Structure formats: structure tokens, C-alpha cells
Image (tube, rainbow, N blue to C red; front, side, top):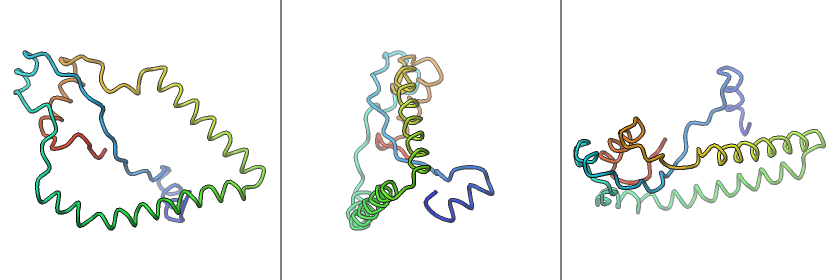
Amino acid sequence: MSSSKDHLLQSRLGITPDAGSWCEIGKIPKPPPDVHRNAGNGALRPGFIRPLRLLTLVLASPFLLILGFLLLLASGEEVLKKWLATGEERERLRTEDLDAKRRDTAIVELGLNQTFDGDWNGAAGQFLLRWYGHSSHHKRYV
């Protein structure tokens, strides 16, 4: 836990306070013409960035630089904690790293790292057609 608020959420709610993260869905193959037509012939490519969004990006870029610097400091703090950890804490960190490696290996073995299975008539295919039909960009906040 990185702060007392995180610890408070963990103790009261029983959950780790991971709210969300940015993700990018990989390239989705073009659906067959009949499936695309039945889904409403929506756009299959990202839309253009509107001028107001571009202005917002320009105005927010200094804050993004500050955020990047703070994230760099946070990662330095994690490294420092690993260096100063006691033997018991190092063992716990080592087991967490092994669990993460096992999880990543299992994800690759099960094929969960693939974007799409290619079934456009299934629930996932129809969801992606609707999702990209309303999307203005290929990155989404999940």
C-alpha cells in the first residue's frame, strides 16, 4: 500500500483501490461485408481529433509533464524501498514477482493477450462493432 487512504480502503472495503487504467485495443480485423452491413455500416477507423480536444491536449500538456515527473519519483521510491527492505520483506517481494511472472505466462498460454477471436457474430464481435461505431479514437479508458 502506498498511502494511508489506500490502507483505509483496503481495511474497510476489502479491495485494492485500483480504479482503472488506460488501455489500447489492438488492430481489429475488418469484418465481412454482410456482418458490417447488418451492424449498421459504422466507421471502422478512428475519427479525427476535434479542434477543442486538440486545444485541451495543448493546455493539459504541462500537467502531463508534471505527472510524468511525479510518476518517475514514485518509481524511484519503489526502488529505494526494495533496497532498504528487510529479509522478510524481500522474500515477500520475490514471491510477488514470481506470482506476477506465473500470471503473465498463464495469460499468454491461454491466449488472453489476443485482441479478438474473429467471431463477428458472437457477443464480442457485436460488442466491438458497437464500441468502434461510437468511438472517436482507438484508445479507451476502462
